Image (cartoon, rainbow, N blue to C red; front, side):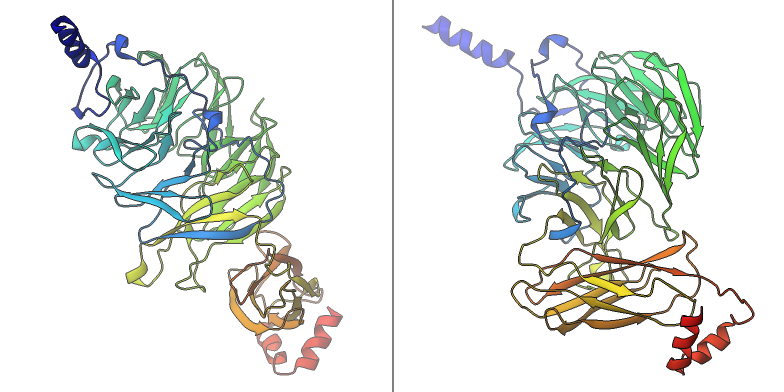
Length: 536
């Protein structure tokens, strides 16, 4: 009997402790690796840009998403990174400080947990539902009920700088700002570490277990599964974004200046292409087309075979703002955040819809999109946001926004009618009408397409036609037409989809007539103003 007791005690000492707290453990004993086969498809959106290749491509159809804000989850802290979604639809994200949130698919808080250190970065979900994330000085793992599983401590100067990826054996890879890449077993012990001269951006993992990352030292790196260097590209320039891996193994990387590079799996350069915009990270459409969102303006579709540009969708972004990377549905719909919008493009690069992200505290002010979009199994798209407005007491609030199919009792899509061309400066009138299924009164919000937005006006009766007016100072520098968008909200707060109308603002054929002072004078005489609009 004593022998069995001794053997049992010996077994306990030999078994790795899954809750172990370690510091700078450089264990490389492969015998301690758990057999941990995973399938990321079991989760809806398990890590940054969906998968370990960071394609941004969902397996779910989003063609039925009309662009209506279903709900928003409030946080008293800014939400700076994309949500990850487990197989049951639970959403996880971290705040800009030290909060970790789990939210049900209906927008109700499941649990909230304080992290042991500040500034959580992008999350990832393991096959066993473990939630992984890096902070300023630690890498943490949490059970799906919110309790701490283990912590991997690192030196303070090595704060995590990117997003974790998980390979098919469950190994977690995470990089730091001072040039370390860590491979971590699912039980929290360190498998290996590798250091370079610059901070690590990425990493991404291919089907063979090769690990790719970029750095601000200007190189693209490929490591073998054991952490040894497989190849390193020639120096290009600093990278702010990690690489993306195509279905054929091609590695795509965008450096800080306006180029897109494609590398073969052996490290040889396949092609390079100059882009019209300073770009973010590549996403990959179902047909293999590369979708690149500019950091400050525009979306570009690129042919993966040679880097040629297929189409460009221009976007006007205020100074100091930026765009997110793209998430793409299995139907090819492209979603990206731009300042205070979530935008959806058709696969051919035409606009499908755009949805304003607002705050209930100040409905006339908007939230700024921060995290990349994430796509759920019902086609709902989630983005995170930050207020950043002029009211200091609310400066750091944030939301998770759920954009998808609205409530069946919500008002109908407003019908917007008016003249589809006109002159600058003059007022142009439009009619708007929507219907409430429950016959509730209706409020209207109107976006004039030039940066001006009319706040909720009303209430008006259901099915009542209202008249609104607006003037544009000059033609649209981003295209021929301004898009006038209107949405309705009933007294229960249910929102309609956006109704849209295009108007072309152009100078008159006889430019002698066009004089801003003269046209402003006509504003005092509506009949003359109307006559001039008819003539021109």
